[in-house]
Length: 77
View 1: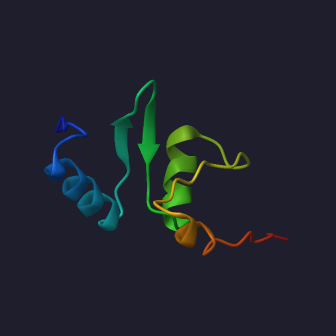
View 2: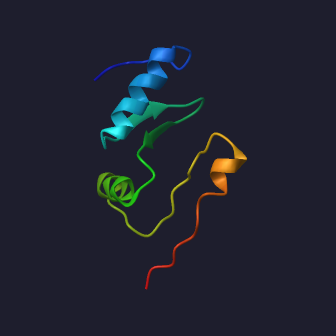
């Protein structure tokens, strides 16, 4: 396990590299620990497996409003 500090540019590069490789990252925010995963079906499946759940939604953080409008709600039948 590697400890990285948020104010280090190497941290962002390392996290992005791990997420692009399809890995899940445990990260500490201001107040709580969180799991980071790629925004994809595979990423969701990984989080569901780790957290032993499948019905609850996840919080998706994006860098700007343009990226937020790229997301669509997909209803599963």
